[in-house]
Figure 1 (cartoon, rainbow, N blue to C red):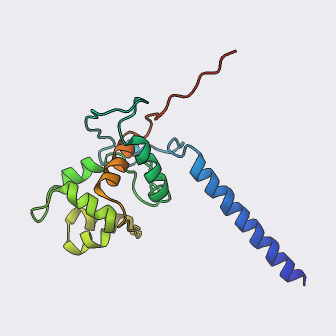
Figure 2: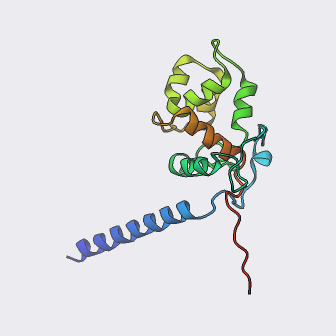
Figure 3: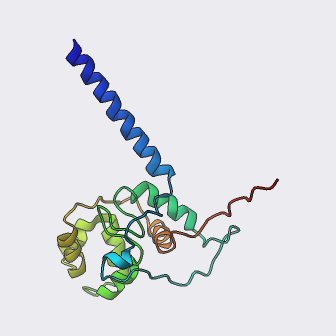
Length: 174
């Protein structure tokens, strides 16, 4: 009877820890960690930001806030824009793929989107940069066939500019 009760208590504690951890990951600002930034942890380019021309009323580029939410729900369990985790830091990812170059008459940007949707297809095609990523990281990347080009563009916009505030924080007045 005690063994059964102890097992139930252990399971409840585990569930509680998982729930608290999930809450903290979802609600905490995980993009500001006290770890080595990508620029110090790899020899790959650390930052690349294209020109942003369209802005919304909050002075953030159009799609940035949606990109942040898409990132949180699809990518944040393995990636961080600035710090390597289970997968590589994503800030500068577009530039890294651009540097890797086109392959089989297909631009690198299309290969990147194909990689995000289903990396297995890109690996089967033999894209050298993708094969190198798989060898370096040796972890399985999830597939995201539901993501449209527009969704991926928003995610990439966010990871290129993770510190941009979508809305200014109110200033307390007395």
